[in-house]
Amino acid sequence: METALTLTTDMKLVLGLVVFMMAMFLFERIRADVVALVVLMLLGLTRLVSPERLFTGFSSNAVISVIATMILGAGLDRTGALNRLAGWLLRRAHGMEKRLLLLTTVIAGLNSPLMQSPAVMALYMPVASRLSSRTGLPLSRFLLPIAAAIIMASGMTMVGSAPLIMLNDLLVSANGNLPSGVATLQPLKMFAPLPIGLALLATCLAYFHFLGDRLLEGVGDDSGVTPARTQSYFAKTYGIEGDVYELTVTADSPLVGMSLGEAEALHGAPLLLALKTGNESRLAPPADARIWVGSVLGAMGPKQRVTDFSQNNFLRMATRLREFGDLFNPSRAGISEAVVPPTSRFIGKTIAELQLRKQQGISLLAVNREKDVLHDNIRKLTVRAGDMLVLHSVWTDLAQAAASKDFVVVTDYPKGEQRPHKFKIAMAIFLVTILLALSSRIPVSIALMTGVVGMLISGVLTMDEAYAAISWRTVFLMASLIPLGWAVDSTGAAAWVAGSALDHLPQGMAPWLLQATIAILTALFAIVIGNVGSTIVMVPLSINLALAAGGNPTAFALVVALAGSSNIMTVSNPVISMIGGPGGYNTPSLWRIGSPLVLAYLAVMLIGVNLMFH
Image (tube, rainbow, N blue to C red):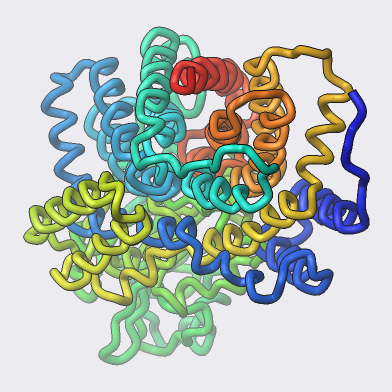
């Protein structure tokens, strides 16, 4: 078969942009959202997309739906719904590990299709930590099954993942470039892929129920000690042990006039977590805070080490906390662990540049990076995605800092600004939102944003909290790449690639084999360029391939959207990136456990799509 289309200059330009985007995403020299903005501007400068349409991705239904789901998820979290859920799960499990794991993954999976997957994982990490601490089971036994269930169950609705949210917009935009005589592509309804999502969730549950013991054996920390704000855990894992003592600075002390950072750098110095100068007591004082005669230091460490430091520096040591008793009350402050997600602004900066103590009132005690615990010279350490930060802070300061989404706290701790009295209101608003979304007369984006307005008016969330809940990196990534999908389709590049591909494939190839090829290719692209980029590139291609091969374009496009969310084995998926450090998973273990599940995912998804469009 000869390809009817000729490769034009516009086709070459848009295909060149696709290759450029893939190369930039692969080598990660520039942030993904910055790359997306560069691609957007090049589309405008080359006139591949008209100036009138260039920025309409920011107002698209897909982007508005993503923003709304983020805010709705924050509203549910603010009411303490997940704390109630953890208690319910423990009661229902009756102490049985398999039942507890099954219930937890089921509930997490059922939450997933109504919220963004990274947001659901962020909500369930404290739940998993609480369950781990109460049962004595290692955190690694919970996190990966929960993450897999969240990823696989997101296919139940058209708002469960970014690819599915974008799919309807991509289908509508494709109508403008369909050949004459071809039926118009209709958007899929809210719960159209529900049977497929349920089958994927069941596959995940069966996989870990029957193979979980063997798969997760030896992964992470199997000692049974879990991060639950216990001294034994932090002593064993990070070498952070001992009690807190008060050290009063005398006139003979060499520390007089020193900054706190200089005192910490002295040989044998314990952890200096608090400072009182005059009438001001402060937890996590900044490194440039000065120590004077009469200042009191809150030091943590083994008694002998603190005693030696005290004697060597002419400090008066007291075991009773007279000045800092309130500050170190466990209900007010303590040690926690937090993982750095791939969207964090911390990435690429040194600990010193972050100024955690000065800006946010948080002391960084250690960093866990790929099972290596780093204590020395951590101020010079450059932060990476997946790093586990060990923090000491007042809980309210921690909650305020965590709201920025630059790190996700995995330790269960008393959070401020919880509104449990709004729980019933939030659940009612959420239920009404879903019912509106089910209506064929109201677009999903309007239904979801109606729920957001309800939560704001009812006081479940404040406007500032709603703004903070939005991952603007995700918004800019999606909005900037959507026009690239239009250009791939409108220039004929997708049709040209589809025709060229059919020229090199066996004649009369069954549509399901073409779908399988597209699914595998999309899954591989998702590992390299993420689920958003792979979907935007592959949906126009799949539609044109379906038209050329006599298949159903909507079915082919749905295959792409579902396959784009199949990555369960690499940290390029934000959900997997979030659990790597807390669960102690390394790359080989993720590939070993995730690869068979991805193959099962693709197989079940292909069967489901073909049954759905039979």
